[in-house]
Image (cartoon, rainbow, N blue to C red; front, side, top):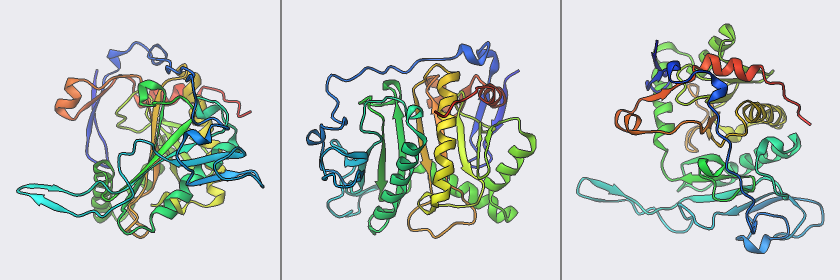
Length: 335
C-alpha cells in the first residue's frame, strides 16, 4: 500500500510507493564515466585552468604548478561573478539584481579518479577542510549571504568532467530550499523550544530503522520522508548551524563517515551517479539554536517527471527503512 509522508522540517509531502519496485537492488544505474581525452584537472595541466584561489601543496611547490593535493580554481563558466555591485532594482512587480557571487571548483585529487569514495580518508578530510576554508574566507564579503557546496558525480548527475571534483556557489541571497528549512526549523523551535534536527537525531537513534551509520559524532540515515531512492543524510550530533565552524576533530571523523557512506552506496547500487549538497546557515546569521548543518546525498536512480513538476510531490519507490537496511548490510573496507 503506498504511503504519504510529510517532511517534518519543510512540510513537503512525498509518496512512498514500494509497489513500483520489486526490490531495492533491482533499481540501479551505473554512472556514465568516460575518461576525458584531455583532463584539465590532472596534475601537470594547471595552465589549462584559471589561476588557483587556494591549494594544499607539498612544501616547496609553486602556485599553479604540480605538487598540490587539493586545488581550488574559479569556474571557467561561472553562474555568478565576484566583480561588481548588486544594484538591486525593480521593473513593476519584478525584482532583479546583478549576478554577483562566487563560483569555484574544488579539484579533489591530482590524479585521475572518478569517484570520491576511492580517495583516501586523508584526501577526503582535506577536501572537507578546503570547503571550510573557502566559506570562512568568502563570508568576509558583505555582498555575499550564503554558500552552497555541491558535488555532481557522473554525467547523469550533471558532471561535465569526470575527474573527481565538487563546486561552491556563494549567493547574495539564501537559496529557497535552504530558506524553507530555516523557516520550518524556526517554526518548530518557537513551538517546542528545541531544534528539530536534534529531535530527529534522537528519534532515528531510538528506532534505528533508518540508521545507516552511527558514529560517535555523526549520524548517517535515510530520512523518513525521503524524496529519492536511497536518499541519505549525514548530520552532526552536536548542534552546529554553520559548516564553517566545524572543528579539526570533526573533520577527522567526517572524512571517515563520508567515505564509508559513499562506498556503501557505490557497492550497493553499482556505482550510481549522485549529487550531494551541504546545507549550512547563512553567513549573516550568528549560531542558530534551531538549525543544524547537514550533508544530503541523492543517488540518481529515478527521474523527476510530470507529476513531480506539476504537484511538488515526489514519488519514491524505495522505502527509507528498506534502503537503510540494505546499506547497513554492505561491508566497507576503508583501504
